[in-house]
Amino acid sequence: MKDFFAALFGLIYLLGAIVYGLVIFIVSLGSGLFWLTIGGIFAYLMAGLLHSLIGGPVWLWLSIFIICIIYMVMDAFMGNKYDVWQRRGSRFFFCPLTDGMSIKEDFPHSFTKFFGNRQ
Image (cartoon, rainbow, N blue to C red; front, side, top):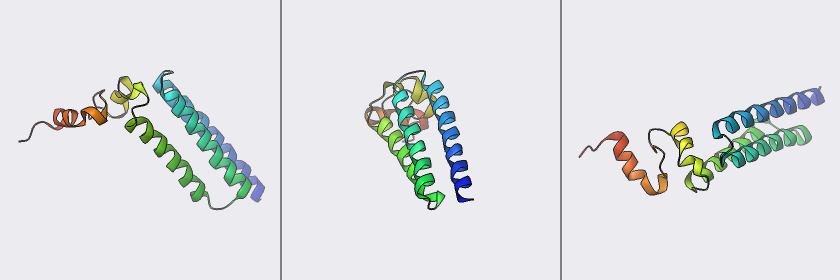
């Protein structure tokens, strides 16, 4: 019975990774987020593989997966490594706060633009 659930969770992880990859790839349109997609799929598959091979609580492997994805997203966003975050991608994911600008360089300006000058 344990093998059945391990295989079931592995299949769920695999399908989730495929859906996740397709959605992110369509949104990114082949831009720099493509590498974020590859990293996300890898983290998803590794979490499923670890659960299938080692067992243990599901929440532990899900936590590892979530931490990996958050790290990659923050690395892409704050590190300014992917130009899509500064152009059309940031409008999709973080609009209207960033408004297509680099958050490291233009955050005070975009923050004032979004919330208005309240002085």
